[in-house]
Amino acid sequence: MNTSSNPTDPLHHAAAVIGLGSMGYGIAHTLLSSGDFRVHGFDVVPAQVERFRDEGGAAGELQTVASTLDTVVVVVLNAAQTETVLFGAQGIVPHLKAGAVVIACATVAPEFAVTMAARCAERGVHYLDAPISGGALKAAQGQLSIMASGTAQAFTAARPALDAMAENVFELGETAGPGSAMKAVNQLLAGVHIASMAEALTFGMKQGITADKIVEVITQSAGNSWMFANRAPHVVAGDYTPHSSVDIWPKDLGIVLDIARTLKFSAPLTAAALQQFVAASGSGLGAEDDAAVAKVYARNAGVELP
Amino acid sequence: MNTSSNPTDPLHHAAAVIGLGSMGYGIAHTLLSSGDFRVHGFDVVPAQVERFRDEGGAAGELQTVASTLDTVVVVVLNAAQTETVLFGAQGIVPHLKAGAVVIACATVAPEFAVTMAARCAERGVHYLDAPISGGALKAAQGQLSIMASGTAQAFTAARPALDAMAENVFELGETAGPGSAMKAVNQLLAGVHIASMAEALTFGMKQGITADKIVEVITQSAGNSWMFANRAPHVVAGDYTPHSSVDIWPKDLGIVLDIARTLKFSAPLTAAALQQFVAASGSGLGAEDDAAVAKVYARNAGVELP
Image 1: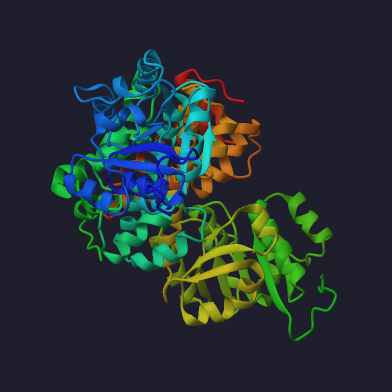
Image 2: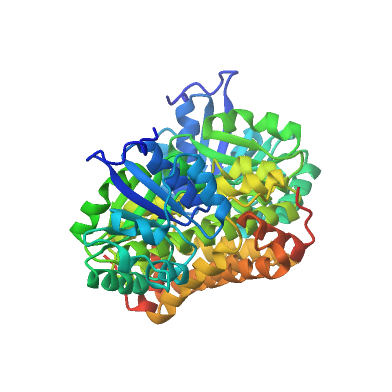
């Protein structure tokens, strides 16, 4: 329900979603649908902003509305974009009121989250370290998983938005950092499992088994993973529409290995998986669905994919 | 129900299970419980043979009873033991009647399965390439998954035993080979996923997250796998009772990489995972549960496991 026609209702919260990509747009849509928020949507692509306003999003320039906001959900690509949005030349934090909360959803290093939280705190702004998981479809349905950490005040301020966005909110600690640390653990596994899906599927095909038979058997066997079941059908269908792109993985596994090197943690599977995604990106597949890492294996082994 | 007291019943099949380890004993028990079989159990460990006879297993030496058997289920460790059991100095195949079927359950190279099937065929004996998956508990409950291939006659002859042993029988082709090829695909994934479980769990702990919190979150997230959900709790509990041992993996991932090298298939994740299991075995953990590969990661990173 779009209740932006009643912005003075005391039950209303004012939110901005910064970054209207596939995840951010879904989140903005969900907040709007909940009926509890006046929602502003911002993006570097004007057409996305227009599209969201046509759906019921509130008008106004970012810096103009900043002081009215209770909640800012930042759904950009990486740490650099997060910092620009919060503290860059046009950054929003200096314009927020004290007690507002930033919900930071990008996958970033825990140390970066700690720094952002401290800089927000200097302005009296709460910061929730809140990486998201689940994909664009779950974002649009308000069924994300959020790996969150932050102060009790940050959680309290963020609660109405979290309730609208998420099916699961994992509360991982009272400071920024653990949320991003858990997201890094998840991304390590997710990236390795996408690459192992590709390795196993093409290995079976090289032995003469058909891709659809492999998917049928493995999804009922101990070799299954969430990512195998989700991504292997893309290879079987020959459909590389980017639900999540190859180029996510050099970034996210890069974050994992940066953390690992800093902590002197040896992560050989992550390192091997990263190289396969780098090879996929380097051979022009960066914008395809991440299941296209199978094309690297197929090319290296002379396997013809569906 | 034990019906070995009525061995002349025309509905009865005569079966032998060779190899009464955790998987083989469960299979022998299941065949016996079905009430459709007279079941002989054989093992190099006399106590296991005695234990099975006490449960209702039929008596008699292997070579004496061989000519009475309809079905021989071979549940040994590897290809070398399979060949010894079938064609060694005391091998059973020369003593089987024409039309009997060998159900070969070890994880072996597809090429080996092809050779065994051809040698059995020379004697008029059917060979079902039938690697099993599911673990000791499912073996004892008649709920294995079997990745099977062989001639129509081999399947027909094996059917009563397959029905008793398995919840899922995947029929993968009309010759020996594809069953073992699919098992290799499954083992590639299973081995990589156990190692990635260990890598991710210790990576999270190194960042200060507790192991039980990681398991709670990941099993509800996109980073989950069948193996993560099954094995990570062993690490959380500090319980390395070998349900499936570390030493399985240098063997099985070795088979995968032997096939891969022969076919010129590059498998970098499998290679990385294999090295972690070799390090686990080399540091004295070979007989522990395969989740103990986490100890290699923990030692390398100065992480203390539960």
